[in-house]
Length: 400
Image (cartoon, rainbow, N blue to C red; front, side, top):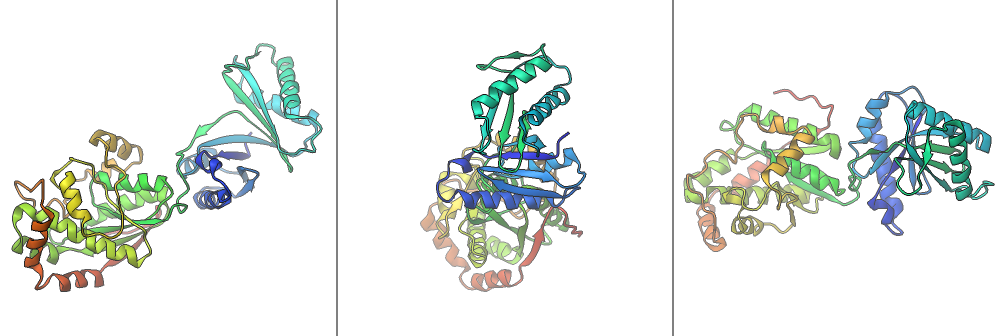
């Protein structure tokens, strides 16, 4: 029955003169998502609407699933396209639609019409009245309720065709990826950072990611785990450039030269420095972390202040006020949780002090970092020179 989908969006609709930019980005994201779906599709932007029309046979469920992973879509409406816009033909299609879509159900309804084609002989109120009358004649068991209908049947008359729909399948909402700049995600193997990447992308931010690998203390399986997480979030974010940094020498040097209760803070400060260097190199406008206030010792207000102090780019923390269970719930929904809890350590969980400092003093931290001045710059340079870059997509195959 369905050969097309009407795509509705929320926030984009309240944009001003630059709305077309967001619409174009959303259209392109929809095209990219449908490239991996069986069938050929035409994606059309027309008068505040985006239509997806199937040109060949297609898999309905697969198409809906792909569209539900595109940020910027508020609702997906499976739609009947009526190319012959004579009123008799529209009425027949509307009644056929009610019969096939509801299959004998009894409900109250209301017809809503939108006439974008102003040359059409009937006005929007006339379309509503006449269509409602025709439905009642064909299905006398139904009842009109204009205040609180159980079902709303929509008719849109546009230049090239008329469209009928009533079902709305919710999308993710947000803004289309690429409409709000680009940032670098610090991606560990934990639960939080993949969710942070997902959340920031929902606001239209394109992301790349950096992972700090510390062989032999972190295994190749830990590296594969991070790649798998990047693949899972790339379903929503699109292609991710993943930068893998060998952090072993820097980590060991910090362990040898600095107080052990400050290890985590100082290591994180060097991670932020390296991540910022990579971010600037690829024109990112910020860094993203999965930190949440008070979750661990390195995420107290004082600790976050200490890690921020080494950055000139803004640090975005989309999970900053989330409870852990809130984060877990999202991780389960986007299918990263089971991968995140695989028991492979990352470099943030090795060499952890028994009693890490929770209220670090930035001046003291900076003074203790002075113990590293003999070799640290060369180590950072070596780490940056030996970065491995992977282009991660959902279909990517990478075996270790």
